[in-house]
Structure formats: C-alpha cells, structure tokens
Image (tube, rainbow, N blue to C red; front, side, top):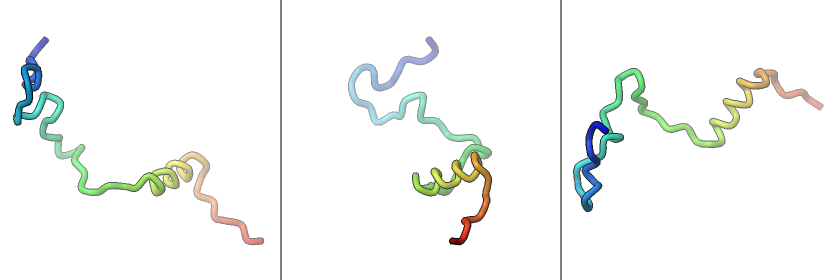
Length: 54
C-alpha cells in the first residue's frame, strides 16, 4: 500500500487520498440535472428526430 489513510486513526480535517486536485481537462463548472441527462442520453441513443404532429 502507498499511503495510509489520514482518517484511519480517528477523524482528521485533512482530506483523504481520493480528494485531490482535478486535472484542468476534467474540471467542470456546471451541474446537469438528472432530467436533462436522461433526455441527452435518450437523444444520443435514439437520434434527435423531432416530434410528430397529430
């Protein structure tokens, strides 16, 4: 093992190894709601055809 967890022996204010600075290419400054994500994934999966009129 590389580092021992700072939280192993009680509570610590120091963040664990999984909380690290993100690479600039992976950083984001937005949050997409689950409804919007669902619509985006559905459009990606099934195409972006418009709605048919009755």
